[in-house]
Image (tube, rainbow, N blue to C red):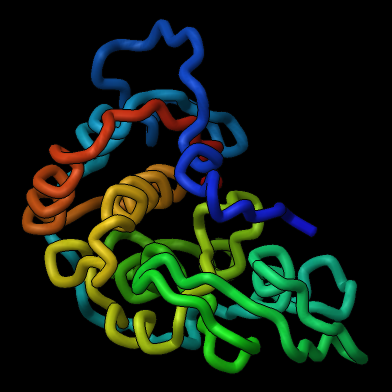
Length: 227
């Protein structure tokens, strides 16, 4: 399994402890390290370091992001891997990783879900948002890596199908989790994923993130750069 999710410690687990950091007050993570390298900075510094640019909303097709692959050839695709690792009560696993039963927690709307059919694996940053923010210039392999990112547990999350479809392709200027208690985590992880993949933010999106995060702890995060 890629990770074990402990709901009571979710925020603590995703916001890593502060470490010695000698970079300037406002580092530029997109240029500070090569892919595979990592940056450690506060959430506000990470937001400040993101490029601000208008979105290019043309040409998107969902098929440009091949997703739910079985990267390690163990019989379970990306969605099933996340289901297994985020289960509050483990499901039964049958042939070809068919999952039945089990219980999941959806942080977006603060609800529990019985059985995998009521859940969606949410891309913290939606595929179209990624396309509009820079992924339109990526290779097909890079887009596949984004759509199936198991390298950082903050990229994908199991949530209720209802909340995921309400969110759709929206960014934080257009949608916030209905559970107010999840908003610090949601906006923090949006910044983390955009940092990880060196994606830009548009002006309205940046304003919304800054407004939401102003009411949140300015925690230190460590992000491994994927590209």
